[in-house]
Image 1 (spheres, rainbow, N blue to C red):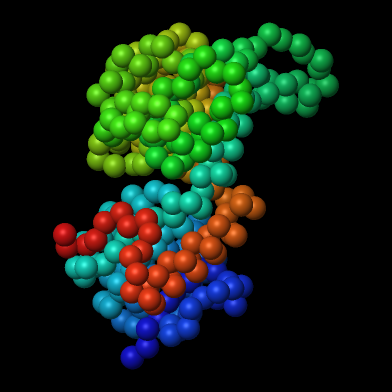
Image 2 (cartoon, one colour):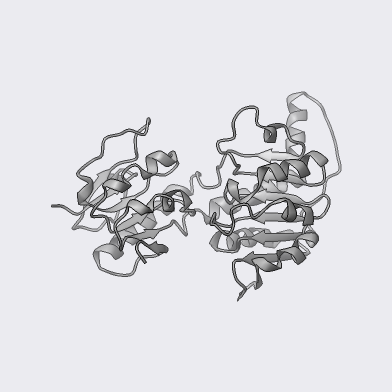
Length: 317
């Protein structure tokens, strides 16, 4: 029996992998039905393929009878946790904290600025050869509310810092104090939403956050506010959002949607005041070097019996 590690990045392209393990490449293939690279029973560390459909990611799970670690290359792990019932107890599930903060925070800032400053309208006017000046709000002097103040939420605030904001309010599951100031609990959202000009969602998808942005949440947002979602699509109730968008009361910039991918003909495509990007918060040139560093660090820790980073849960506990 060998101690195999299934990697979605060719192992020869990753410098610094520790000895003592056998590294096998598996990313599911183009069609998602790529043959397993070895006996699944020998796999001790499964690194979940990145940017693959959910069925591809979870296909090996029921066969990994000897797995000890499941490492995702995403910040969110909701697509994997839904299938952990087939996994033996004692398996550590780790996310990719440290990999996506820079890229996702960049996109959150990009979507915010593009929406406020009317970039989509300018692009459409350019395509028609029309010089169309307009007055748009600046980010300066605005109040921004970040809902989901983990590593990505903090990285978003880092990038907002130079923009002369009036205020940044932070919300997480529970109250705490950071170097930048107070983080409010979710229970205080009703008092914070009416003051926010921009609401940025960067929370993980959990049972507590699924449908968090519902009709009541949206109703509390001030007229003219912008909702930016770089979290997960189901954090937002799509039908409730469409109601507010059709009124023209708020605008939205969405990197994630529910459903996803957003099908042709869906009302969100044509809703007024919406900017949509196709879930591209993570896949940039910043991804691969950070993913490689994470894997090398985690696997060295695994070989040396040191505590792993980013452990979200351990099965059976």
